[in-house]
Amino acid sequence: MAEHYIEFHDVVKSYGTGDVQIQALAGANFYIDEGEFCILLGSSGAGKTTLLNMLGGMDTLTSGTIEFDGKDISAFSKRELIEYRRHDVGFVFQFYNLIPNLTALENVEIAAQLCKNPIPAKEAIDMVGLSDRANNFPAQLSGGEQQRVAIARALAKNPRLLLCDEPTGALDYVTGKTILKLLYDLSRQHKTTVIIITHNQAIAPMADRIIRIKSGKIQSNERNADVLPIDEIEW
Image 1 (tube, rainbow, N blue to C red):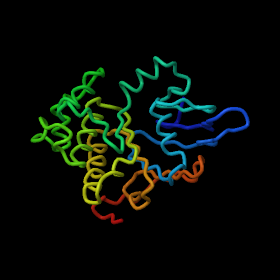
Image 2: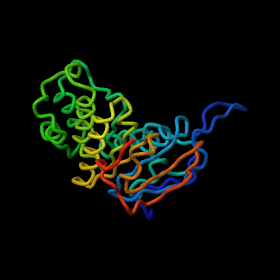
Image 3: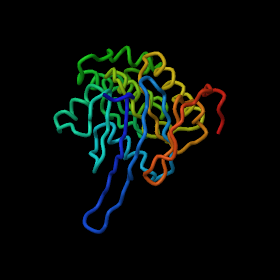
Image 4: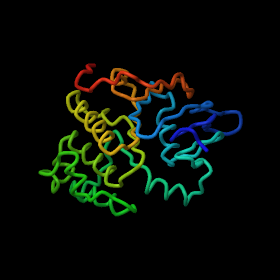
């Protein structure tokens, strides 16, 4: 039985064939506990997105094991991975990935229709403060508003795990801080385990757990005893 909610054991991810092998992850070991707001730090090419994709069931590993809530997801079949992605995991990406010919509400409704115990789309839109923009199309929304729709879409699935890949990377400073505060508040209110990958070390103090990765290897995994509100963080 796994001791922690998420556990990576000697996870290796290699690309290429024959003598030309690139290791995106080189024996990664770390854990995250349930309900934590975790920030995974690393420079471009460090292996952050690869790690996130494998935890989210979007990529397979070369060797090692990944456990989520006591289940070895690295041994899942393709069908089991589809079910895992559909019901347990919410994704928030840097560039929103909204469907342009659907309104904000309709973008969220699509996600809500996919899973067993969804949050109603209207409620998810309300949670991110976009009630008055629900009938607007993505092109009629600012970058920050589009990202909030993307967060609402992820939340509508009522996920146990929310994975965010550079969610403020395409946003200005003020909007980025607003999005981070929203993610933090939602994690606290819903006790959702949230993992954000970023290269911005300045935001680390707002996390319950800070994991640093370099060249495919975990450099450190620290529990932060002195969490700072995002309002007090500058970069």
